[in-house]
Structure formats: C-alpha cells, structure tokens
Amino acid sequence: MTGLLAITLTGMLAAPATAITMGDGAVDGRRIEPYDLEWRQCSLQDGAWVDLGPLRESAVEIGEVALRVRQETTRPDGGQVIATTYFDRTSLSPLRIEQNVTTATGEPVARAEFALGPDGYEGMARRGGKSQQRSGAITRNMYQGAALGLPLATLDPSKAPFIFDASMMGFNATYRVEATLAGTETLRYRGEAVEVVLIDLRWEHNEIGDVYPPGPDASGGRFWIAQSPPEGFPYVPKYKTDSYAVEFIADTCAVSDEAQSE
Image 1: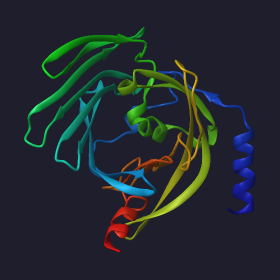
Image 2 (image 1 turned 90 degrees about the vertical axis):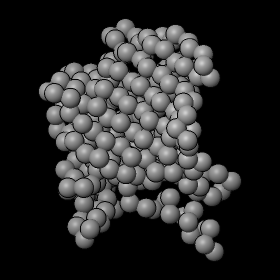
Image 3 (image 1 turned 120 degrees about the vertical axis):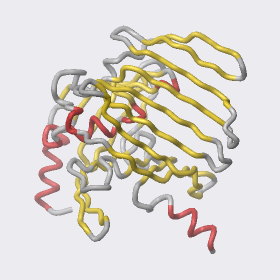
C-alpha cells in the first residue's frame, strides 16, 4: 500500500458512516446494465476449498420500473436452485422474492414466493407436498443481502463508510450493515486491466445480536466491486468470507482443483 493510499484510507475509515436509507438517491439502480454471467463457488471444509458448483446470474429489465435478478446454482449432485428477486429499477428495493429447488432429474423439491411491503413480507413456502404460509419483519426498505453487491456498485466510494439495513430471506433475518472501503485492486480480464474497489462488511443480526466481523478472512466478508466493468465482466467479480467464496476469475476456488490433482 502506498503512503498516499494509506493516508486516504485512514481518513475514510475514521470518518463517520454515511447512513443510507432506501430511496434516498444514494443507490441508483439505473446504473446497472443487464447481464448474464457465470461465477464459481466454493466453501472451506476441513481445511480445503471444496467446489459448490457454478452460479449463473442474470439481470433483466422489466419495462422501466423493475429489474429482475435471477441466480441459478447447479449443485455437484446435479440438483438446481433458482432464486429470483424483482427490484424497483431505481432504488433497488426488493419487491418480490421467489425460490425454486429441483433434483437432478427436474423433480420439484421446494418452492417459495414472497411479496415484500413497507412493514413486512408475506407469502408461501412449499416442501414435500406441504404448504405453509409465512410472514415476517423483512421489508422492501432493506437491501437484499443475497444480491448486495449491486447496490454497493452504484455508491460513491469516497463517501464510505456506509451504514444501512439489509435482510436475508433464507434465514428470515434482518441486519444493520456497515460497509468500509478497504482499498483497490487491479484484476486482469482478457488482457485488460480492471480496477475494482474492495468493500468490507460488518453485519449485526438484529434479532439475536450476533456480529459478523468485516474482511475476507472473517464471517462478514469482502466484496470486489467494478463500478464501470468492461463488456462481459461483472459488477461484482468476487465475494469472500472465511468459509465461502464466489468469484468470476478463479482464485480461491482454484485451490480445490490444485489439491485434487496432486
């Protein structure tokens, strides 16, 4: 780290956090262009990074009012998980969340559909032929934790650190999140240099009080953000915690292949 960058980062980290609320204009989802790309996932198990299968994510505009983000994961056993979120096009407020799980042969395992409002959500979850009505405190005023890189990609990093509300529907949990600037990095893609911003996240679980510390070697994790990516390159090339990584350019997840070839 250069002295100038160190001084800049120290000043930013010492600055008070910029509070972001849904729809205040700090996040502008209109900056996100449609895409359809594939990442690689892995998790740390018994000291080794183990392949979790590919993650394909696409973003499609629905008229001028919504952005549909679909994440398709194919597990090593051939089963598939498709998670779809419909966002308000400008604020990236999550309006509707759907999840569909199937076996390798396409047989249904589980399905869930939830509509989010200003005061909570409601919907239905189905598994094993049984349906259950569900509701909770997650609202459209909280950023969708499973796609948090997209709103981060629209923020002005010079105003970091940021603090905002987020949710994880899969855990029925809400969080207070602080995002801090951890520097920059240059990635190589098809012979081109791509500068990315490093954003570390500290999550505080509102319901049970647990804290997930920031950084790629902690449970809070780090995002690699490309605010103006070249064609074919994602806004979020990587996210990593101490036990999970998803990346567009093989790095952490390549370790498992190298270990298996030895």
